Length: 186
Image 1 (spheres, helix red, strand yellow):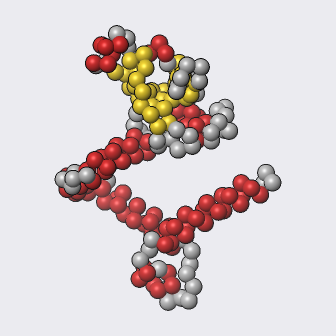
Image 2 (cartoon, one colour):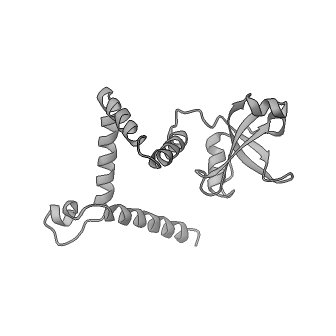
Image 3 (cartoon, rainbow, N blue to C red):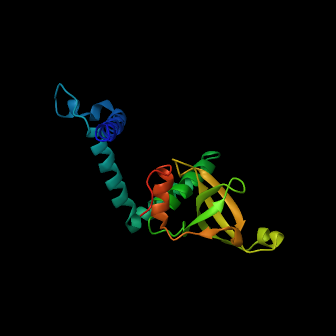
């Protein structure tokens, strides 16, 4: 069972995503139409998505592409309602997906959601504005991710003295959170 269950679930997940990506291809671009075959070749949607991602990445990584991207974002920000959703998702994905970004500085341990219950969180910065003045202490910005989807979570502000910095890396902490505690850091 230890061999077959992970293998079977991995195959099911891969099959799900291949079918999902194959389903988004317009009919005129499906392999059976393009190649004149009677059968559909699985995975063409994934290949098409990868080509689009590579092409888009190459386009926006040069000077002209960056200018076009900036112009496109200005247009999107003029659409009422959409701009709020787009801005939030863009900022969140930039924070999580950008490996050079130092947004999650340190893995920390905090008592959350109440005293006596501990959770792993991430320091996102220090805050010394109005909240720090009201509390009268140095405040840390903390992001508490939810399990198993760390893209949703809670932003809390805690006095520095209530936060315990961990020696584990941010990556190891993410693995621990995503695995719901099954994969322990080494």
